[in-house]
Amino acid sequence: MPDEFDFKNYKSMEEYGQTLEGTKYLHDLYLKAVNHPVRREILEIVNKAKKISKKELLKVLIEKKLIKEENQLVYNIDYLLKAFCINSIKDDESNEIFYEITQSGKVIEYYE
Image (cartoon, rainbow, N blue to C red; front, top):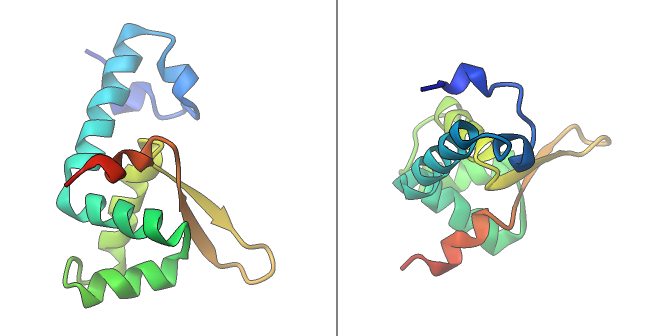
């Protein structure tokens, strides 16, 4: 069974969908992304805000006592990016990073 290093250069769902192994890997990654409590809360926050800065998201998660430091945010954001649940946008003027929800990430609207 292929591991994550076999798929590290894939940039779209279509690339994963070209093989059964790629499809299974993406599906597993997606389930792990949306079923983790911290990542689920990140999805809820980003979905509600439509677009949120990395600084603001970090502040909210620390206030909610879900994470303690920025590297925990980075780890979870990377997971959500790889699973195509959120997009990262860099503002060229301010060099600030923003996150927005994707169609795949909107699954959070169906969680209770």
